[in-house]
Amino acid sequence: MGAKVTKRGTTTKTLKAALKEIKSSKAKEFYSLKKFSDDEIGKLVAALTQAKIRVLELGGGLTDRACSALATAVRGRQCPIEELQLQGNNIGDKGIQFLASAIVENPHLEKLDLSWNRIGDDGVAHLASAIKRSSLKTLDLAYNEFSDVGVAMLEEAVKDSRLKRLTLTGNARVSRLTVNNINETLAIINSERFIIAEVLCSALYIKRVGKSSLLRQLPQELIREIITALFGQRVRGNGK
Image (tube, rainbow, N blue to C red; front, top):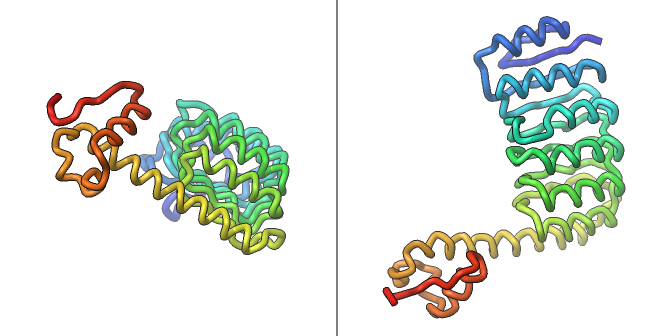
C-alpha cells in the first residue's frame, strides 16, 4: 500500500515521492499522513521529525505494530512534535503501551488525540502511568472501549500531571457520574494551579503586595510559607 501525504491540499501516493516532498517542503507546521503501511510509517515519521514538523496527523488504520515504529520515531528530546493526532485508527492496548513510553520521553508533546480507537482499560493503565511523567496538557480519549475502571485510573493520574483538558465523550462503558467526577477533579486542580501561578508571578514583586488581587487576601507570612515550599528557601517581604 502506498503512502498518502497531505500537506495543505498536496498529495503524493508513493513512499519515495512522499519522502522527497517532506525533505524539500518549506512547510514546517502541519502534516497529515493517510493510507500508509506498517512498514512505511517509521521512515515517514522519522523524515517528518527531521523536517521540524510540530503537528502530525496519522490516519487510515494505524495498527499496534505501526505504533511501535511511531513510538521509536517520536521518542526523545530531538523530536519537535507538539501535537499528535491519531484519531480514527485501529489502536488497541498493545499500541498504547508502545506510545506511552514515547509520551514520557518527548518533552515537547502537549496534545494527543486518541479518539475513535480501540483502547481498553489495560491501555488506559499505560496512559495513566505515562501522563504523570509527561508534558501532556490535552488528551482526547473519546469513543474508545474502556470502562469506569480506566477512568478511575485517569482520575488518580491527573492529580499528579500537567493535564488541563481530558475528553471522554462517547465511551459506552463509562458512566456519566464517573465522567462528572473526573471533570470536577480537573476543575479543582486547574483552579489550584491558577492560584499557585499568581503567587509565583507575584513572588518577584513581593514588596508590592497591595497590587496583587490574590495577595491582598493573604497574610504576608502565609505568602512566604507558600514560596518557601515552592522554592525551598525563605523570602523576605517589606524590604526586611
